[in-house]
Amino acid sequence: MTGSAPPLWRQLQAAASVLAAVRRGESATPAIARVPADLRPAAQALAFHVLRQLGRAEALRSQLARRAPPPAADALLCTALALAWQEEGAPYPPFTLVDQAVEAAKRSPETRNQQAFVNACLRRFLRERDALVAATDADLVARWNHPRWWIERLRQDHPDGWEAILAASNRPAPMTLRVNTHRISREPLRELLAAAHIAAEPVGLHGLMLERGLPVEAIPGFREGLWSVQDAGAQLAAQLMVPGLPPRARVLDACAAPGGKTAHLCELKPDAQVLALDVDPLRCERIHQNLQRLDLHAEVHAADAGDPASWWEGKPYDAILLDAPCTASGIVRRHPDVRWLRRESDVAQLAAQQKRLLTALWPLLKPGGHLVYCTCSVFRAEGEAQIVAFLAHNSTALLRPGPGHLWPRSKVDVGALPDNQPSDHDGFFYAVLQKSALDAPAARPDV
Image (cartoon, rainbow, N blue to C red; front, side, top):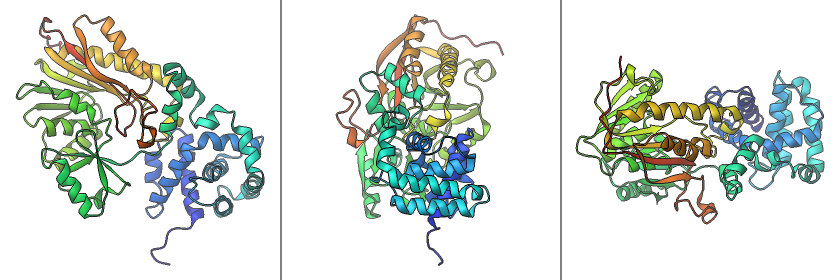
């Protein structure tokens, strides 16, 4: 019938294809983009649920079969197990999921030969679900649905909060808007949303958290540039940058794409001379598009922030924002594929890159100016440890009050981690560094 939802077996096939891509090392975003348009919303919802329950699903599959089947069949089997193992919160009844997963296996040439195997495993799962789940409860990966190395690192980094961090990371993130205060204040925008029957509540200084997520085109004010989608924790970056900036301040956003923090800086400080850098020209185009929609202006260059000799003209900056490349371990509630794509060795590699950027950019800062260092990571190697090491080797750097580590949390987590601000946000680290006013002006590097 025209306009009806695609059958569930097709949705399961699409979700399993996303899981298979992630297992091959591909981000879920392009994998979801390849799904036919009529299946895409459902496939994303199911795939994200699967990725949040993948540790348990793989443990259950190991109970059901000594060997994993071929990749396509294993992705479908684990998709069904991830969706069906826990009745509370499951998108469909377990029996329906099992029936439709077997149908999906039968209808795909990639899995047809394993249809009987998938059917046998899932029927056994329905018969013995409680016992099978109990047999996997002691498995840390099954319990927390994160890689073992990730769990162990969190236990070491945050011995009093690691469980709360993992629990929050497994909950879906809300849709949060950042109000473009250069165009409209928060309460009038909230009233505009309410007139469209969209409930929202204030979060942070400039945010509105929606009761439920919607396509951006369905929310009033998007094309007019009245707001942008940005997590409440990410909105702190510009707020930490602006205080104390002089008129027409020179500001560098060193790793700017896709431009959310750049735009927020321009909204809060319209007279600032902002240079936004990103090493990827295609990502720089995203910055241009975002600024254009919001009717804002910043200079945008495609350049390596860690190689100032290739782009810096020699005039120091009043403030620098270094939103450094990181593991993205703080945003897995929003991007659940990240936990399965990262490797333990990535932490040290990215920490070295962060050190390189800090070292390269510090000389570009005016005496008395400030640098805001941030990562969307919950690992201390990318946050506190990085700044402690930098301060130990830079006598001109002074640590000013700042948020430090912000753990991911939602409204249901209030009180679980008292160091957090009263908000619903992803995981971040922020440090505010000021350069001693006695430091000599930066010298232009040789080009």
